[in-house]
Amino acid sequence: MKAREQRERNYRDVFRREYEILAHAENLEKDEERSEADLRREFSSLTKGFRRLLDTASKMTRIGDSVQRQLVETQRELREALRDKDDLNHHLTELASEKDEYLGFAAHDLRNPLSNIIMGLEMIVEDPNIERNEWSGIVTDSIDECRRMLELLSNLLDVNRMETGSMIWDYREFDAAESALLVVESFQKKAEKKKQTIEFDEPERPLSAFGDPQAYFQILENLISNALKYSPIGSVTKVRFESLSGYIRTEVVDEGPGLNEEDQGKLFEKFARLSARTTAGEPSVGLGLAIVKSLVEAMQGRVGCRTTLGHGSVFFFEIPTQQH
Image (cartoon, rainbow, N blue to C red; front, top):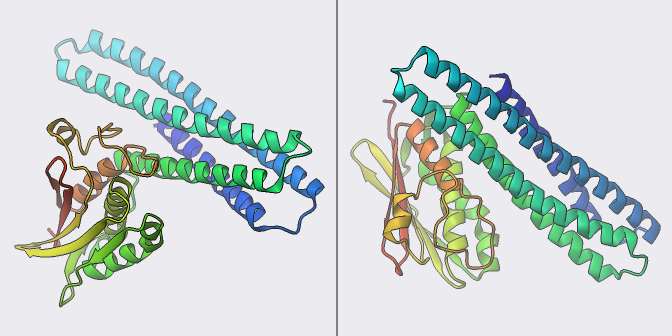
């Protein structure tokens, strides 16, 4: 339990520092009044902040190694005391493997962008003749890397909360269509950047559902985000609804590449690496659909996908209309 709490604290610490540095960098990008000397001092401060983040990421890896040693020792003791409990040992092995996958993925996906950011900021600090447009590009790239790391850390925290049972739920009745419209509106600017359109099939009456409105919001965010990432420029993504017996179904229809049979088999797994690629180089951490599945099932719902390779996909989820 202590290891889990330490991991949660590390994720929170990196998440907090990342958010503060991102806000700092965005303010720098907008501020055109500062002197060159002030800017170099600010960039030097940002570099130090990212070095601290890199140190924290390394500590996370060392903590993972310590947990691994404890798990190996625990498994050895269990095998000696419970030799006939093969299922238990198998489960522990799977947990250890999954833990390694989490920490390895997090450390790798934090270390690389952090190193890139530090290298870029050091260029600004060390080169007295760097042009404003050049360092402005470095800052913009750094902000994009920060957003990617924030998404990764946010997803890891969500997975950790759900698996440790520390997720706080707010189950109640809410209007699914009203919540969905808010999500669609929040993605309009992102869609416009790729000349994409999001069509919202507004129902004639409220769609009363029972669950956690924030979880519903997060589910739909993940599905729409994926649809935009994997669909080509100029495509249309549709959000529509269907009332079923005891459930409200929400569908996200995209014009992406579709999925082959192998991809469909691992679609909702954690860190799944699919053959499809984003159409504008957008990052994908491989946790979104796993989180979607966990959130839907926690609300006693169902999730699935209909897809044909080369002809897009329809991702859908169903949540109850009343408390089960």
